[in-house]
Image 1 (cartoon, rainbow, N blue to C red):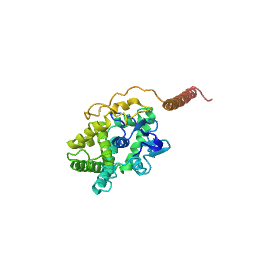
Image 2 (image 1 turned 135 degrees about the vertical axis):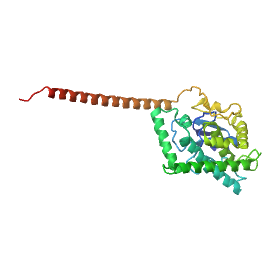
Image 3 (image 1 turned 120 degrees about the horizontal axis):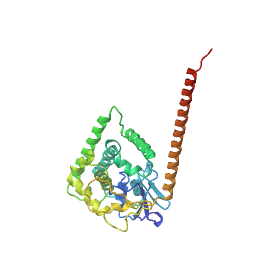
Image 4 (image 1 turned 180 degrees about the vertical axis):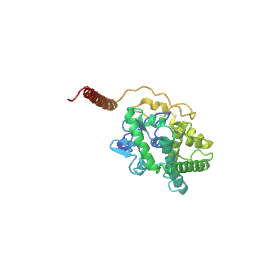
Length: 326
């Protein structure tokens, strides 16, 4: 296992930290957890400018970059390139392969369904769009809902049926994982693997970021050993103040929220300390404000011209009434 390419420490570029998590993005959390499992030194940077980028999360070190939308994702790329591989002793076990596929498909679908369709927009907006002007964030949010419906094959005609299928598969997955885990500390071979990283990331997001009214959250809470597993691993690998792998953000100091006491599994948003905006963020917000101002001016000019034309028509009509043709 190398510290990185060219002797440099890895940098994980992810989305914001909130809900008491080092990153509240359900796609980014497993990568963060995987690097923590590997005890690999890495820094964390939060990209708040491009919330709809499918490259995030990505890992970089010097000229080396592993994007999430290439080569099977970040974790697979790190394994293929021999940066860090936690699965060398389990990848040939058929049950491990099928369980990993179940987490990556059934539970991943359930999370994005809850985040973008079943639950209100509070969680999604806080994670992805809270730093953007409202009109831009709203448009991106609606665009993402449309994309998720296409991804999950949801239409007006089959919406109820697809919801039932998604929750049924999630329930089956939780039952299978609970049986598999039993009273063990890890899911396979008493060791951390990418399967543990994937499920721990899923469970942390479900318990912390989804609202208490979430159906998926309630189904997970039915399995006490999965909740115990999640809390124990969070305390050991995420809350531990280890200087070798403690996340450092160049753009958002709220990463410190990840290091706190034992979790109470509530989804109440935590207050976020004020921070200095980067030059790129300031430039982006200035452009957004100019855009909104110009649009407002255009609307006002249009309304004033429309009102003026109506007044002219009224005056002409009045003049016609008082004019006699002889």
